[in-house]
Amino acid sequence: MYIGDLNSHLNLFSGAGPASKTAIFAFPEISNMPQAPKDFSSVSPSAKSLLMMKGYTSIPYAKQTAALMQGAEIFDLSFDDKDFWFWIRVMHFESRYWSIDQLLEQTDNRNILELSSGYSLRGLDLCVKDQSLHYIDTDLPDVVALKQSMISQLQLDKAVKGRFELLPLNALDTTSFNDVINRFDNGPLTIVNEGLLMYLNMEEKKQLCKAIHSTLKQRGGCWITADIYVKRSAEMTASLPQSESEAAFFEQHNIEENKFASYEAAQAFFKEQGFEMIKEAVPNYQQLSVMPHLLKVLPEAVRSSKEPPPKIQATWMLKAL
Image (cartoon, rainbow, N blue to C red; front, side, top):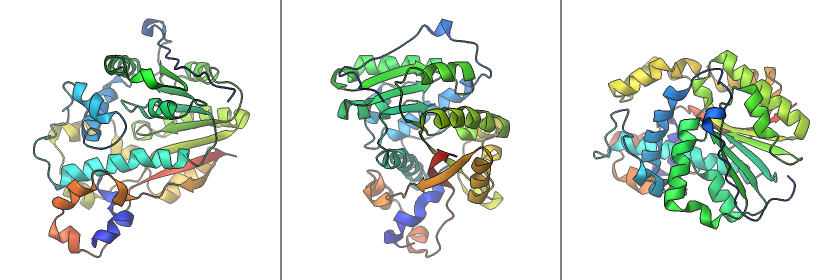
């Protein structure tokens, strides 16, 4: 692969009313949260390892928050031996993060809801830059509690100009989902997620689609999801290094089974749920902060290969029909 081809081919290797001028942080008592329809708490530790990897990138606040994270190596990932596969992972997740921002820049919606955000602080960063935004950042209660602790410890909220809320939410809890939606003023809404759909089976995906579709039909707006992952072939799976604990995690949560069979299958699924894909993010690997590290360890076989690896992930903007 020629270095110039990285921008198009390295996708493979990953595992509205006026806003307040001051930041608004909302942290309801977690004990008062409605009983979640399904316990997804076993997924939460994966967000810690993801933050540790993002700490090697220029993603806003990732370095500071990763430095506070304890016990994040649940997949037995080596953060000392940073080989080709390590940097490939980091590159994938950095690219996935910016793909959301790329499509967000193509909307003019002032209301943004992020589902299952993990330890990302995209909403905080955007509200530092834009006082007109109302951004609600959500995840499960334990993630939200730790995330708020890190925000407070680092005093990251001091420069926020827009309206930023950090709330516990199970995205499949319809009542709680609607309660969060009702916190926004009237107007179009952008819903974003990064790293959620692969934890949902087909029926759960349909349940989430139903809630999002109903919301967007009523309010207008769009859904930006970075979770268009397609299943790996058996040969590809066998060729990728994976620790025993990581393999067990994937098996426990049926990660591979929950992916789409193909991009065509993904489009057909969303069409059945009343959505149309209107835009796809175009990755620009050359602009990633991790690229210099990756190029230093790029194997000669990859460097010289002219065969593009298969694309296994995409970020789509969806419109409710």
